[in-house]
Image 1 (tube, one colour):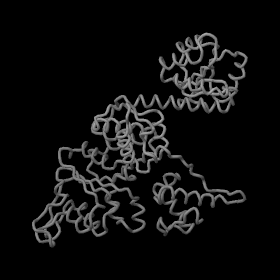
Image 2 (cartoon, rainbow, N blue to C red; image 1 turned 180 degrees about the vertical axis):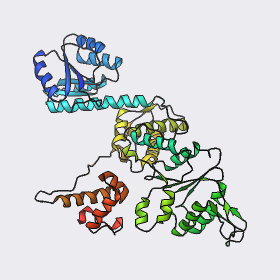
Image 3 (cartoon, helix red, strand yellow; image 1 turned 90 degrees about the vertical axis):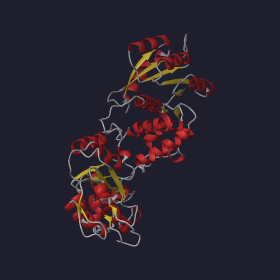
Image 4 (cartoon, rainbow, N blue to C red; image 1 turned 60 degrees about the vertical axis):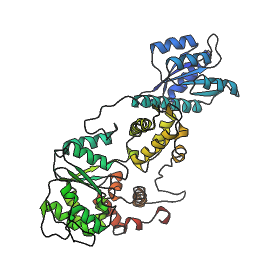
Length: 472
């Protein structure tokens, strides 16, 4: 309850000349998970700070000799990362304002409620932790060569970096999957930069951005007269990528007609231009990416099964930004430096309240949304650090809503299978119908999920046809 985030009890230095409350408060704080050290004067507290590190300083305002305000000012000047909580008499607004002006993190009105004290100290510890993290992020980090675009220190992104290092020299086709905005093209670039094809071209095409006939011509090329506007022959991207890498982005959006031709090109390592009679070999590494669940697309017969198995030789699954913890702050700091330099502004980082807002927001648009948010914040910023007023309204005012496990109503009595059915359908809603993502959350494989859905009469339905929670 009172941990400092490092697995130990938060250490409180409590300064109050009312020694009669010492035993009661020490015991009460210990019961709430804190380790409390009691001092009766400001000079004693300063000596204690010289000898030991604390997570929070709680001090009374009125004490003989050096009062709480003077102590607060000394501590803030010498130990700016240590949060100070001031105790003031109830209703003494002027003293509370003075405490905040002196640099105190918060204040507690006497007589106080112990649970309120606990919550105030917890918030102070979290605030101090965030400030330390923000300060750490301002220091340069060490990232493996050619992987600087994949910033972050989370376990999830570290797994991606290690996988890239293992498969960079392979010629196997790679399928990069993940939600929009997670950085699939950055991974493709990193794979190219670390491969034997690094000196060659990196050629990318978005398969969702053009109609079938044009996509086929772009990929395979065409001969003169192949269609109305084909006034001259044109080499396709497979041949333009010779000696380098061809990146087929959003391959899940590729029309079925082109999928068959692509499969042949991948199997034969040759391409035939539209309207041509001869095939030409190509030498390029093939990388693909999709924000769709291609296994679901195969199941729904929107993507060829044989093509899926051909491109799914090695898969790199990118985590969502909301699953990467403090990487949000790492990326935010990077974007601050980038956009501050572009704007010619001296902005060194973000305030702890900004960090708190960024960590609380779920980032449905992932890294791309965060990048846009920071670009906007830098444009609005007037000081050396970003403040909460610089954030977009939807980030600033976001309030999280917990995922309630659908189960018993006030008078319901349900079987375990019905509870499981409701929960699985809720997870499918939250993963936007992705059965692969849902199975990962639920902790079993896709075949198990399909068997359960089939038993409940949903397996043959499209994800959009699954009943909503309101309909069940």
